[in-house]
Length: 457
Ligand code: G3H
Image: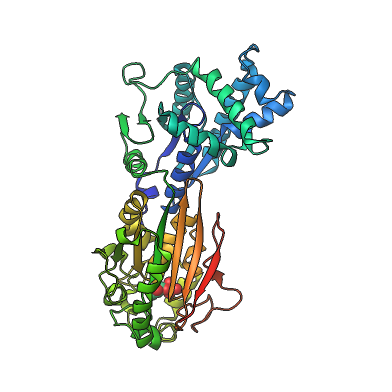
């Protein structure tokens, strides 16, 4: 049966137009929205004005320092061309996608005049618009953003020194400060907008008139920029794992119980501030038994339960291949979309994990003990793993995964307990278990530096 997704139920074309002076975290917010909506299977793309500006500067034989130097007469032609080019790219992209999509116009969009032009152009092309302003007058946030900008804005990738970057960004801020008009409901009452003040200490909303826009608002409200860790682990090896069966609510095997003890030691050694740790489990026995000896507050989430295998629950892959050969093949052909009869697909799991992601964006010091399929989905969100790839990632048992969430990427560290466990990994085209050299490793993803520490028993 076809599955209705957020994209299908909201068949709209939406452009999120970012507004804000330089060093206000605009690209960070844009990239986060891209990652979140893509994870929900909504085609989303960010269009960065800086990339087009670099091109225009090259063609005009000018440098950014000349352009934004307050002693020089402003060269409006370069800036106007840059804006038009970005808008044209967005319009072109919308003609290429069918159904629903979200474009992010990542630019400064400093004046009412510019915003009015963008709004009219998009509306004439039947594209919905929401402006998203990052307004910030907290100098400490701006200073951090200026030092981060070298790694985020293509304009500064080739800076000769940090001081050079700081000078250039400061010139640019001064240049735009003179013309910048913040969004207000009284001056631009017709616009749909979200205004973030000092990141998200205050949020002002105007005409948030669709479900998709309200999802974006809710998501942004949960974001913060602080570097932090999230800890993930599968449950210890279970009796069902030993028998090669999927699903069920089996207890831990002897080695699984060993892991539950070992986890206390690993947490103690590797998790800083573990006195403030919170442990989240599913409602299933094997995750709770794994968390049993951890002396921290615990929360059970139904949303963390394993992918429901429906009528295949309790079977081995060999048995599924024999009893339901068509289903077995259909799942291999499209593992992300395939839904077990009476059960779930990976897409279904992502839908139910949304509140978990919101909570994880909002929190630090959380250890999530859950299941293979669920961990793949959570990992895919943080590591930007494509939906076709994510159900095929190998996530071994008896391994603690540390995600270090930084403003502009996530780093992964695996901490392996030296306690053997069976492999529960099934490759495409076989019903046998076990990783081969072709298996997609957990380390796939976009922004990674992986370290593996081995703990001797
Ligand atoms: O069925 C439960 C498994 O954890 C999901 O694994 O998607 O690789 O079959 P699978």
